[in-house]
Image (cartoon, rainbow, N blue to C red; front, side):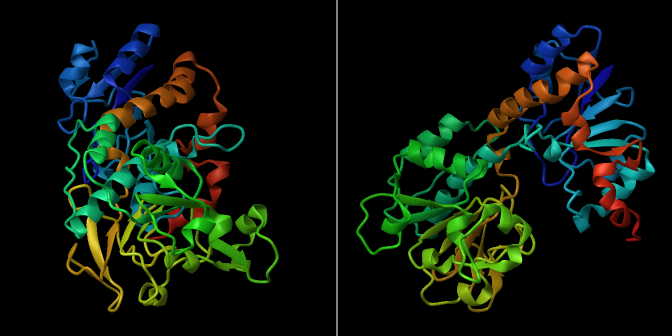
Length: 403
């Protein structure tokens, strides 16, 4: 078997890799009957020379590989027919912008496995960047707050930025005395909490947060979905019921919005779930929030000020709550500044690649190299030789509809 690590072709660029030089070298030594090569690229956090120094072949052409690993979606013209691809597809939720990609994968008889659906027997994801998204989300949000109010300036992460550097950088400035609300309790939220704890922020409970009591430092509260919504009929919140019957619930978020200076969105939100901040609430004079870090980046989802995603090069834009329109970042203090970078982990490309590669080795690469049947890989496979697998058969009409 020959496996190729492909160059990233999506714009804006992504510097992450699926497997680091050290990890590829280790796999090649452990499984000498197979071979893993790397397609030349000048945008990776790990350079071609890093791979060569680890004894890995760097090639221009990967058309002789059986399986190809990337990170983000592959440009349609770069897809090689009859191959097995692994990357984040962003198409299984019927994302309209990626319908052409799905149609191309079908047309080219490609087998496609989506990282997002690599889950264990308990349906828990085994290869994900969520924890790191929360970490970078805190950094970018606090950086934006400093720029908005001209309190301090934090550097834009470069390609070699690390978790240690991120935390030490935050510790190096006098962070503001203000209240931050972190929503959700999953990996994104846990990553955010990790950074806040490391930099000495004080965590308080809901009761203390929803008061006018004095604070002496950067203070935060974590609110999960059961604190953000309530049943319309007044009966107690039930998670199982909420996942199946979200329409029976309404937002209970504004009680937080009146006491929150900075909102960090780290919650899961699906279509049909209550909207936490609609356009009318965003213009409510009692709304205290003037900085939102929407790490989950649900465009026009639970927070209606997230009108688009942003990039690492330009992470911020303003939302004018009166007009409901986007404006230039930091245009007016009364505007709500939004951070909505949808690839936050890319700011820590080396750390996140190493973490992701470890998971990928364990759950994907080693079973492939050992020739083992893998339920994890099977569950993630959307297409088998250009045909939808049974679990993803619901995509049939989406894939066949003319654009």
